Image (spheres, rainbow, N blue to C red):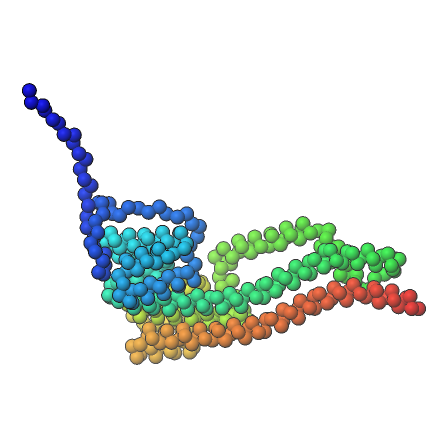
Length: 393
């Protein structure tokens, strides 16, 4: 009797599709549904800092400029990336390209790491076939932005640190040192009145010591109210107006805003982004509501067929030299180059202004700190002088 053999049915092999990476990379097969999903790293806020983004862009531009395919360049950068959250972002961009998408699509999927400016410039470079050139411009742009931001932050951080140190020293003197002297004075002077300066310092010290919780609570309340005011629309308008018009610092912030606007706008135009879209992106990345409103006016006028210089001049925010140079750039057909030239000029002016401001702030803060501590020291020594005079008499 013949044996009947039955073969167990086999599971069908998963369907695959082939995707060829841009450049000279080999053809690779993946299951239908795309490449395997990577586990996302948990991160709060942006997975990369502005400085880290500048380093990444410069390295990517160098690799692509050397002829390495974009997907392989991303794989190289992902292997050497030390931040897990940003490594996941780079790997997902490479997966997007591997599955047949564009590099800009992968960037757009990570808005916390790459803003609209970055994505649109890459998209324009891909459309024009000049991705290597656009990445080079992006590298220069991000490096300049990081440099100018670092200089402004340095100019603001120094006086803030000095103020905190001076405030801490004054608080220690008033809360702990002055009461010790006060006890000595009452013992030595035996009820005699204190000099007026000493009386004022002692009264302030007593008030701070007895109401220290109320003082800390008041400072916390003021900070919270300022935070709420800053988040409101009206508060944002007021603070941004002050940043542009406050004495000494206002000129510095205005020059930085002009440099940011012209460099962003010029880089977008040079990369092939349409002028109306470039104005919208520049408006959204301006960082100041009044600058954004001015750019919005320019956008509406350009949409109606006007040029850039005249409506920009009508806003009365940008200096006359800027609008004049933009007008010349429009007349000669070299607006992107003119905008970048303006940005370079204002970056240099910001550097000089920050240096001058730092050289002025340093002696002023030291003098103010010395005056505050000196008043307390003199107030503590005045009763001793009175005591020596009475003993001599």
